Every structure is written in C-alpha cells, then in structure tokens.
Image (tube, rainbow, N blue to C red; front, side, top):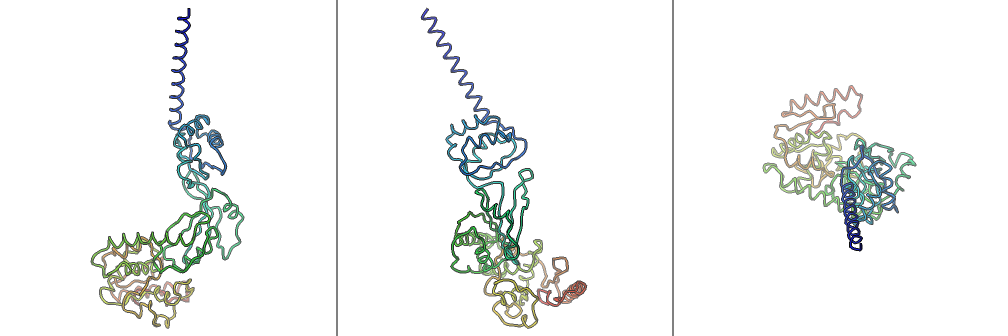
Length: 394
C-alpha cells in the first residue's frame, strides 16, 4: 500500500512540475509575444511611480494582455527597479518585454510635451508643442516672443512638469552674440557666460537640454559640433577652390549662409564667390558690410546707405580685395558643404529676383538687366529700399 501511495505522490509531483513548467513557458511566451496595442500611445510615467502603477496603466490602455505577467517579467529580468520617469512612445504591437526596455533603458522622453527655445536671426521665440502618437508629428500648443508677448499660462504649467523635454534650436546664420544673448534668456539654464565665442565656431542645430544645465557647457557642446562639421567639409573640399585654410572655408560659408535662404541656391551662390576670388574681383556682398556696422550684435533693421557701401571696415567686401578677416555668422552644414564643393558655373553676379531667390548672370550687361527687373519689382511693391537690394557686384 505504501508503495502505491508513494508512487501516486511521485506522479502528482511530476504532473505538478510539468504544469508549473507549462505555466512558466506560457507566461514567457506572453511576455515576449507581440502585444495587443493597435494604435501608438504616449505612456506617462510620473515621478514616484512603480512597476505596478505602470503595469495597470498599460493594461487599462490595452497595451498589455496581463498586468501581472508584465510585473513578473520586469521583476524576473531585474528591471523593475530601473523605471524612469518621463513620456514614452509605445508603438503598436510592442511586446511586454519591449515596453519594459522602453521605460527602463534611457530616461529621455520620446513623446509628450516639449518646450523649444528658438534663437533666430531676427528674434527669440518659445514654442510649446506636443507629439501626436498617431501621426508622429508635433502639434503646437503655444508660441510667444518673450520680449513682446505675455507669457502664456500653458508655458508655465508645462515647464513645471517633470516629464517635459527642453530644446534649444539655433537658426543657421545666427551670430555668436545672438546665441549668447539667447542662452541668457533661456531660464531653465544655469550659470554665467564668460564671453562671446569667436564668430563661426558654434554649430546651428537643435540641442536637448535639462533644467539646470550649464550655459558654458552647452556652448562647448556647440563648439565641438561645429569642429566636426568643419573638419568633414574641409576633408571633402574640391581641391580647386581658392580656399587655403578651414578658417577661410568657414568665412566663405558664413557669407553664403547670409546671402540666401534658398537651400537649392547655396551651390550657385558659392560658385559666384569662388569665381570672383579666382578672378581677383571683390566679393561685393552686402551682409559683410552690415557685419562691419553691427559687429554681429543684432540686426541693422534698415537698408544700407551708399556711404556705408563705401566706408572702409575690415569686413566691407566692396572695399577689401578678398575675404573678410572673420566669419560674419555661424554657418550650418549645408553652407559649409557648398563652400567646400561649389557648383561649377561661370556666374559672377547675382541679384534678388522677387521670389525669395536670386537671378544669376555671367556678364555685367546681363546682371544690369536683372538689376533693372528687380528695381521694377521693388518699385511696384512701393519699397523705399529699392536701391539697396542688389548683391554680388552692382
């Protein structure tokens, strides 16, 4: 009898182990399988949350089939204690294992609300925007100019949230002084700025920051980024261009940056200046004259006077026979590449064409015709600055 009882006990134990093993395998399969989420969601993980809070939220939003399996899986992989606060984009079909990785891996939010401080050539603006998980696009919630507009309550509320992302966006063609003044106005940053970095040494780009980040350290990051861009452009340069140093390449790129806002024109504008340098002609470009007046501290805000075109400054390319001694702005990657690899043309003149772009010419006669057309356009628009719009040797 005892032998029979023992045999039954062993059988029950084996069945129990088999069932337990089956349950574990089933649970593991559920944990790693494609999830039930049909549409992307932005998962908010508040500060102080735990894995139980997150698992219940995910189950309620239909992102996981079982909150319990999600918790067990996170505990089993020793990731439950690595939960990060933030806003995280969860894509359709993401497994529980994948979601655990998303909320424990980094800490940088991948969706939700973002405050962008835009430092532009003409103004500094602040934008509050939110990523729409369904489209993957940001939707603007508020926008204002600090120096002119009342600060919206939404901005203050958003700034106070722990999962808000902050970004500094520099426009191509801003000066170093404008960048420094812009960073001083970004209230989430800390620290003083010892001085204005050399013109042309900061990379126009978008930089993610955190409240309390150092302004000086951010400037150093911008300088490191520009060093990389300049080195890459210099390495890829056309050996035939009349540019002898990386510093001169940045100077030329800064002039290109200030002369056109049309991306497709950069190579042609670069070709005009390269052709002029090769022929020993003055560059005769208005932005260099303006820089000689403002030293990069703000915008001129009016047209150039004829006396200013004749006034001798180190940057006035109507007077000096070559490149100015320093850049006149901080050029971006595209302008650096245009300076390094200009298009091959015979153009030596260009003038505004009324569309936002320019009309290019190989001869003075053709250029004069383009200038006449531009003056007619300006006259029709009733502009008082018709005589100051020509660039490139009028």
